[in-house]
Amino acid sequence: MARFNPCGQSTPSRHRDHQPSQRACYRGNVAHHHRRFALCDVTFAGQPLPGATVDSWEDDAGQARWIARVVMRARPVADDGEFTGRMKDGGAVSGNVVVAHQIAGSTARRATIVEFHGSEGLSDTGPLAELTTG
Image (cartoon, rainbow, N blue to C red):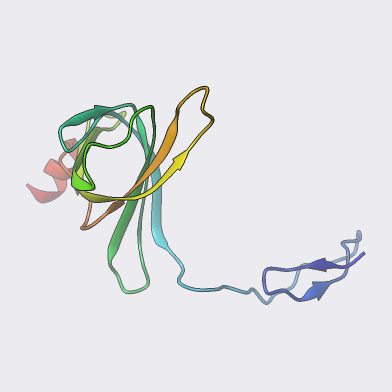
């Protein structure tokens, strides 16, 4: 049975002696220095939110990028504002964000997944930032 690789090309099914191709296919930009971490004590535009998951990375142009995802019961109070939270190690992060996507869940739970996109770099104000900047 034929399979299709990420480049859309047909590849033979894998047998015991099949060696993966040495050629890889990438589309678009490749992220560097990717980090994923959880936040608690989150606020957006002054509104307290449940915990968030944050992805931060550096794009091919060297720009710091980040997004945060939150499952909420109510819609955000604003379209943009300051996003803050506390990491597990006690460090705090903050940055300006815009509401990028809102995906409504089932009506029974009234949950909405909100994706915030950082409009500038994510500022780390925790203990590690003090050691590296002081």
